[in-house]
Amino acid sequence: MSHLVNITSKIFSLEELLTQVTTWKKNNKKIVFTNGCFDILHQGHVTYLAGAAQFGSKLVVGLNSDSSVKKQGKGDNRPVNSEEARAIVLAGLGCVDMVVIYDDETPLEVIKMLEPAVIAKGADYDANETDTSSKKYIVGSKEVKANGGEVLAIPLVDGFSTTAIIEKMNA
Image (cartoon, rainbow, N blue to C red; front, top):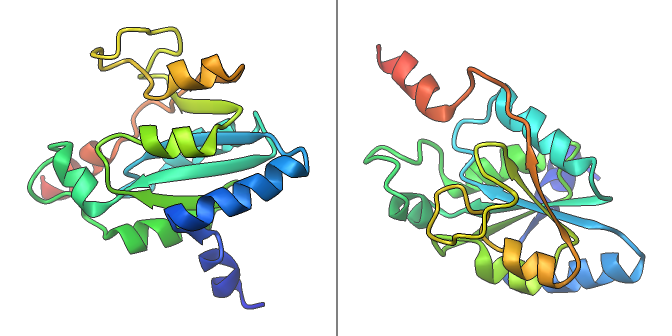
């Protein structure tokens, strides 16, 4: 199998997600879920994803579609890279086992389908926050905890953000 085929085989539709995850769970694989835009992949993203992956045996990354990024109000020029390009770059990382693109503003429906053992987000979120209107609330944490799962905040690498990279390029 060529390397590119191996990489693209990690990108799943929402319909394919359930079949693969069901197989993994039958084989006692612990599923970790995280999500984001991952617009311009940088050291902070890679460190965070590797950190999340260590809490299970399979890392599933929910990727905001282009329209979902627009809904988040990140700016008129975002995303910089298309959802297909961002998915391929993420799937190329050794610690990522599956990438699934979703259109909603949040990954809640994906989380409900997936029922991961762990949800991981960066430490700019709070694993203990229960106020769903708080910017620090981790979407899906209530559902994952109700299923006996864990919610984790992974330390971030200071000085790395897509916004900062774009600002530096524009300076």
